[in-house]
Structures are given as structure tokens and as C-alpha cells.
Image 1 (tube, helix red, strand yellow):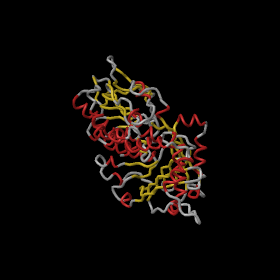
Image 2: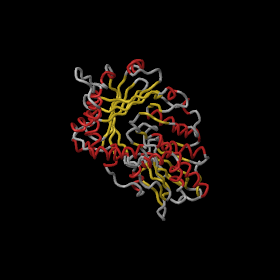
Image 3: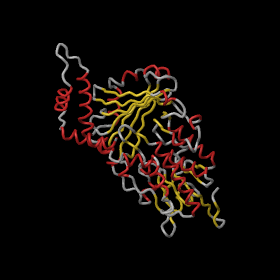
Image 4: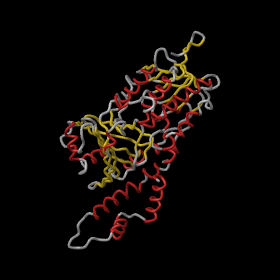
Amino acid sequence: MPENVNGEVEVWDAVVVGAGPAGAAAALALAQAGRSVLMVERGPFPGSKNVYGGVIYARVLDEVLPQWWLEAPVQRWVTRRSTMIMTGHQAVTVDIRAQNWGEAPYNGMTAYRPDFDAWLAGKAVEAGAELITSTVATGLIRDDRGRVIGVHTDRPDGDLRARVVIACDGVNSFLAKEAGLLPAADSAHHTLGVKEVWSLPPEVIEERYALGPREGLDIEMLGCTRGIPGGGFLYTGHDTIALGVVVSVEGLAKAKVRPEELIADLRTHPAIAPALRGAELKEYAAHLIPEGGYRAMPKLATDGLLIAGDAAGMCLAAGLWLEGVNFAIGSGLAAGAAVSQAVWSNDFSAKGLASYRTSMEKSFVLADHKRMQDAPKFVLSERLHAQYTGLICDMAERIFTVTNPEPKPRMTALLRRTVKDHGVRWRDLAKDAALGGRIFR
């Protein structure tokens, strides 16, 4: 419970704004350390405002919630991952199956975020955190020296005081902006994710995608967005298929295309349409995603305030990997540990909270982002989407086209012809190959 200062004002060790994965993880770490912590959630329950359901890599929970997989609200365990390069009528797919991914302690899972967020926040409450819902944090409270000491809310009783505020209020965080940590929104560092959720019986999903019970599929796609930088995805729930695209905000505006048109293209693509036959549309949703990467990350701490999860741009979009929830959880756990240490040392200044970034630099959270810091430039490049996807598909089609009675053409001749047909300059190809090599080495 929070301390009562001078018999008047209760002060929490931490107030966490947002009860998504980052906020719940921060609250869990603090509660397990015996600190007083309050989660403030604007929705009626954690996850109620989140439209994203997808693939979650939750092994980051192993130490704080041993055998979490026995309780987590799993739809399916991902045992099959595919990367699909597409044009409007072609698809080249690299398909990976791994039996080990479907065995404890597992790899990735598909889950509905309202279920997962509520479950994780519930674990924090079980550990001793408190939660108030249907409450909006409307601003920061500062002392006479400018240090953050709490948040204003829209509740009748108003203010919540804390030694540290942890802002986990999502992309374009209002609190991080007010604190001067997050600059004005930059569309170049954001993408728009849109998806449709289609209902099918579990046995039909398993038959069409060659899956066993509780086995799942995750497909990441390039070349399905009319040349707009971005990509597509498909993943299987228990009795649903989620299909969608993630596209550059600037590219979408420049192309003057509505995102639902891109999903319609994808839904009717010959590589996708057969598996959706007879499905019933259940949901359409959209979500803004921070994809600026390491170079676009804001300062993570100031006196009395930390930011974590999407508020800090903790989404890894690196082509082969599109991950966010695991980074949100990792940053939340690190934030909670940093605040717990600051309580022990009684130093809530930016210096006293510096262990937050230090611990993340040593973990996968910032280590992966730093290593992949050039990935946004590569993954969202116009040449990749406007030229290279078609080049790859045409090259593959020509390789496997039987030309009898003519002999098979030489690979080098096919490559030269395909590169020429797509207007690709060899120097650009070499430069982009070198960039990709540096990123994924």
C-alpha cells in the first residue's frame, strides 16, 4: 500500500499509466519486489482498447512467472513460420516447421491481446499491485523543482502521487510528450497496421494449413502493398485467421490508397484466397505502430519518470522479425526493477533511474534494436517493395518454368535478364545487398 505523507497525501512507489504488456510487467516486477504500485488503465479492463492480436514471444516471462505457459491464454503455438515474397499474381515462400516450437517451454504463440493483457495484469494484481480502470491520466504533476511526482486523472478524486511515474500509455505517449522526452509525432517513424479477423472452424484451419491441434502458422509477407513500403501478415488463432498489412503512413498518403483496399488485394490473392474460402468476417481494426527503431528512440528517463513499451518505440520491425509484445514486457520488467532500486537508494532523479537503460542495453531489448538500427531504412525502402519483390518472384518463376524443347537457360543469363526487366541497377542491388548483409550478419 502507498505511504501516507503527513497524514494527508498517499504516495505510491510507482504509478504505472497503461496496463498493457509493458505496464503490467512493470507493475509485476515492482509488486514482486514488495513495492507499492498502482496501474491506471483507461479502458474498462486491461486490453479492452487494444485491437492487436498476434504472435507473442513470452519467454521473457520465464524468470518472473515460471511455467507461465500453463496459464497463459494461448490460441495456438506457432510451429510453422513462412516468409512470402509476392506480386499481384505470384508468391515465393520460405516455409519453416519445427516440432520443438510446439513443445514446452515453447517459442511463439498466437493470442488475443484483450485476453493476454488482462491475464498479465491479473498476475501483477495477484502479486500485490493495485489496478484502477476507466481512468485517464490527463497530465503530469510536478514539484517546485520540475520533478515529476504523479499524474492528474479524470477521476473525481483527481491526483495520484508517486515517487516515479512509468508511462506505458502507448505510441505517441501523451505523458512522454508532456515531459519533453518524446518529440512531436513524425509520420516517417510510424506505420499503420490494419487487419481483418475471419472465423473458421478449428478443424478446417488445421486441414487447410496442415496443422495439428493447437499448432499455429505465422506468415510474414512482402510485395503485397502495391509498392507502398510495408508488408502483410497472416496468423492462425484457434478458430480465426487474422489477415492484414502494415504500411508506411507517408507511403499510404502519397499513394492515395485506403488500407482496406490493400487487404482486399491480399484476401483475393491466389496464394491466400483458397484458405479463406467460406470464412466469416468478425472484425476490422487499425493500429499505429512505432517503427523508427533504435535511431528514433527517445530519451527513456527524466526526474521522476520512465517510459516503456510502445511509448518508447520498443517495436522491432526488421523484415524477418516483427516483434513488439516481448520488447514491451522486457522494457516493463526493466523499468520496474529500476524503480525498485531507486526506492532502495531514495534517488528518483534521472541519474537515480539510469539503471533502467543500463539493464536494457545488456538485455535483448536494446541489444537487438541497436544491432538492427538500420533495418527500417532497408525494410521500408522503395526499391525493396517496388522492384525487388517482383524481381525475386519472376526469377523464381523463370527458374522453375520448363522450356522444352529449348534447353534450360543458364542461371546467370536468367538473372541478367530479370534484373534488366525490372529496371534494377546493379550498383543499387550491390549497395542494398551490402546493407542487408550488415543488418542481418
